[in-house]
Image (cartoon, rainbow, N blue to C red; front, side, top):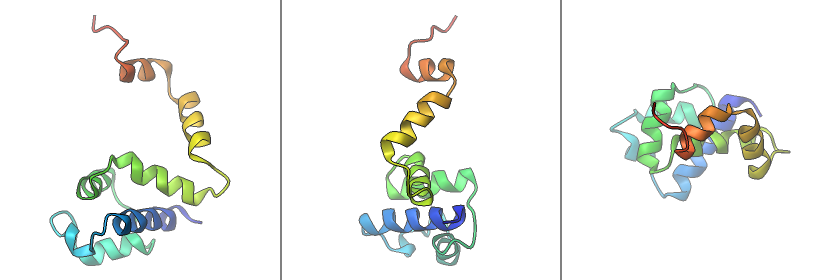
Length: 103
């Protein structure tokens, strides 16, 4: 599955699970644009992903993780998180854990 299609499918699934209509996103997006995203015709900016996530009441990474899980059928959530833990620089992981001093 292409990336744009996977993003659209993940967005649509999350919207459906939360019982939201495309009109519920009117403060951050037109229904036409949202429909284009869900059909895999357009790619959102990172700012738009953040806005969509706020309407869905999820972390933006929830949409992106859903996207990559759909795109790579062989991937599982645990495998994907394991890959991210391996690839993320240790100083970023420590900062996120609050274990880096601010000196």
